[in-house]
Structure formats: structure tokens, C-alpha cells
Length: 248
Image 1 (cartoon, rainbow, N blue to C red):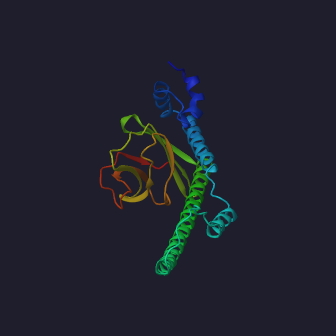
Image 2 (cartoon, rainbow, N blue to C red):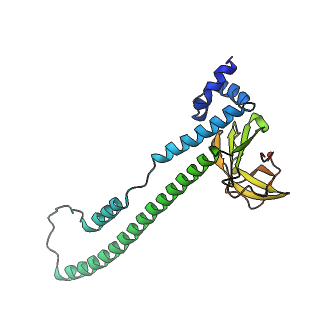
Image 3 (cartoon, rainbow, N blue to C red):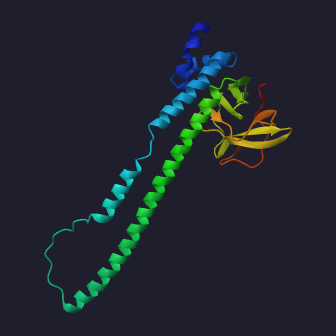
């Protein structure tokens, strides 16, 4: 059996999913009652997410431009095969066919180039948005005025709700979350005096995660979690699996 003193040292291994099943279960039980460990797990989880994003930088714009320029300028070598000389009629037909093929190939190449540019731009925007979200999450977790509330969820899961009034943002750190049913996702909600406002989706494949909630916690008294169809819902379609009062 792991002692309480030992459990305090497992925050890093837990945040990186490096604990065996028995130690993880013991630590999650300890985590629900230890505010210091919950805060440290939240910070380490956010730091791990930022480190992972650091390795996913988009290519430099100049490199993309050079590659695209070379694609348009370099011809592909054709196999050198000796063929019998074609007749004049065949030559004319082949000439017209070759011209049509060149036009079609040029159109196809232009379309491919635009598609590649679009894919690269989309990837860059997604990476930039993910980095910004990770930075905002880390800022909430480390804010001087951050307040937290630790809760025990169903199925043995634990959660920590954190709010920074100065940043007007909230975050939720979950551990031991059960995998939702196939085609479903956990959705977070701000409870504005009984009216549920969408606050983002959780990662269905991660039992431990830190989530930056969408929108302002101002005016909300609690945060709820429901099970919704993949992609989320505009309004809750199921009873909350958790309803947590915001920390003061």
C-alpha cells in the first residue's frame, strides 16, 4: 500500500499517465481530498499539453512557397522508349489530344496546388489556435486569484473546477473519467440561474484532462456535465452526470 507521503510525489507521473492501475486508483482517491495535489496535477497537465504543441509547429511560409514554386517548375522525366514513327493523321490527332491533356493536367495541378495551400493554412490556424488555448489554460491555472473547488464525480471520477475572476475564465480538471458511450461526448455547461449555456466539449478518449471552458463564468452559479451526441448540443439532451457550484 502506498503511503500518503508517497502519494504527494506522484503528481507528475499521474499527469503523464505513467502510473500502474493500482497506484493510479490510490492516487485518484487521494486526489479528491488533496487540494495541493489537484492544483499541481492541473498545472502539470497544462504544461504537458503545451510541450506537446511545441513539437507541432507549422512549416515556415517561405519553405512552403519554395516547394510550391518547384512543383510548378520541375518537369517529370518520361521513359525513353523507341516507337515507330506515327502517320500524319495520327500525329495531328495526338497533337490535339496532347494539347487537351496538357490543359487538363494544368487545371488539375492548379487545383492540387490550391488544395495543398488550403491544407497547410488550415493546419497552421489549428496549431495556432491550440497553442493559444493551451496558453490561456495555463494562465487560468496559475492566476494569482484562481479559486478552486474539488468534487467527487460518478464512477469514482474526481474533478477540480477553477475560476479566475481577473481573467474572466474557468477551467475543469478531470481524472478517472469513464469513456462515454460510442458516438457520445461529455459536454460542459455554465448554469445561469437554471439556463444551461454551452461551455465546451471534453476529450472522450482521455480519462485525465484539463479543459478551458468556453465563455465567461460571469453570471453562472455552477458548471454541469452531460452526455451529448458527438459534436455537442445547443441545449442539454440528458440529465447532468455532475453539477458543480463555482468556487467563490
